[in-house]
Amino acid sequence: MAEKPFVSVALATYNGERWLREQLESIYAQQDVDVEIIASDDASTDGTRSILEEYRDRCGLILLPAVPNLGYKNNFARAIAACTAPLIALADQDDIWDADKLRSLVRELGNDLLVHADVAMMDENGLIVAPSVRRRNFGGVHDRVFLDRDYHIASLLTRKSLCQGCTALFRRELLDTAFPVPANEQAHDIWLAFVAAAHTRVHYIDRSWVRWRVHGANTSQAPMRSPSRSFFKGTFVNGLARRVFYYRRAAILRKRGVRLGLYPLRLRDELF
Image (cartoon, rainbow, N blue to C red):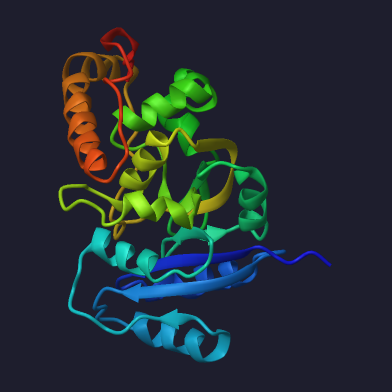
């Protein structure tokens, strides 16, 4: 019998007791993979750590030692750095994963460095409010942005975020150049996607295996986009900002042995 793929799941928590059990159960229910959960708790003041200790004792969850508050990005980075498997997935504390999520992403990863997917949005009661966040946010340009491989890589290199961490699976060797996450980066998943795209080994899957719970305590939300406003901002405002992001990040990667060329998109191509 073939050996099951071994996947580390980096879980960052903070005051997440309300939905944490549901997320943990969905991770431990993953099919045809061996899973280890590495949990870093960011000085929660509710019952989150007690729940993690319960799953540590019952299921073998690896709970990192308590530390003072790190913040969202650094808490996730701490969990990722402690992962031991050759494949790493990222988990928020309040989502729900389909049972075939990791199995499917492992299959889709192939020889790529990072794979990510669409995500469904649900409210705090578990009601699906958007079956495809990507189509909700990107509408008519979805296929170009996400399904055209060359354009997708360029988009990841020049935009703040197209990869949502909870949908991603990546190879551990990505950390060789991605870690440490630069202090001026907004989030760990944005940076990981950029570095993967810099290696031109990133793949998008046009389906969802995650129900992303959006509620008042989220660290990020998913605002609706206005096409006309997005066009104006994308062309006249964000175009310059993207170039700044690109060259700043390229300079960091150059010091880590990864060389990038000139900014890969023309201004007229930046439609959102």
